[in-house]
Image (tube, rainbow, N blue to C red; front, side, top):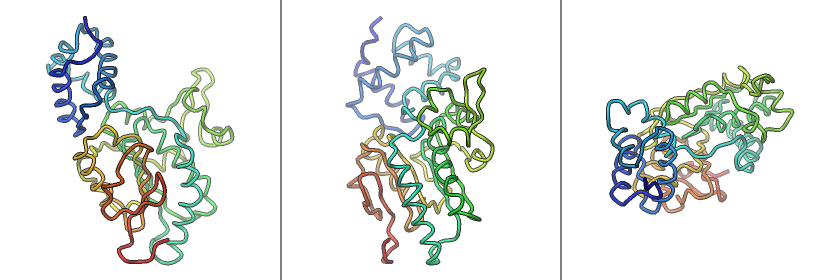
Length: 282
């Protein structure tokens, strides 16, 4: 069987299926990436070829494989504290900016953050830890962190909040004991209830508007690289609408949204702020 690379026709068929399922338009230059990811699923399901696997996905019997397929083609590698400078900003400058905006009467004492395409939950829990470390500065503040993803299995992992040793190795040791319960026999770490209570996980397709609005900050990292230019613009517009004036958008290093900003203003390589509409800027 030739599983080295998808043929043009196969690529187009998978591309159409992915778009129907997720709204993600895989660009033509991602043939190799898609081939590598689908090949793993072909082997895992014991199929002989890309074509046989595609037919299986489209059959009644293949319905339960759709989630595994979506997972493999849309899930990005994720870890706690991935791109640490984003979280350094969050736990210092962001918290200070929120307190200052509240002091000036521009917002109430609450923080709402959306981790878009949160995969298995490492990002929203990292955000929760950063804010929890600021609990003296944020005394009596209401904190909500929403994680969203398109994959059921990823969301189930996120809700369970159970991680293996290799996943938690980037967490500072004192934070690990503060926010996780260790199960030495199973060599796993489970997010403690106090942290989990800050986080809710729901299904959301990024190409559709989020009914939730008024976010102070949205994290969308290493996700938009999977979208075509048109789809990416749609997603950025939806995200911007979900931010409140003065709210922040945190992006990954290669998202390429610099010419899709609308009412967003660039603050640094990874950070954009929604304008206050003629108000003064922090």
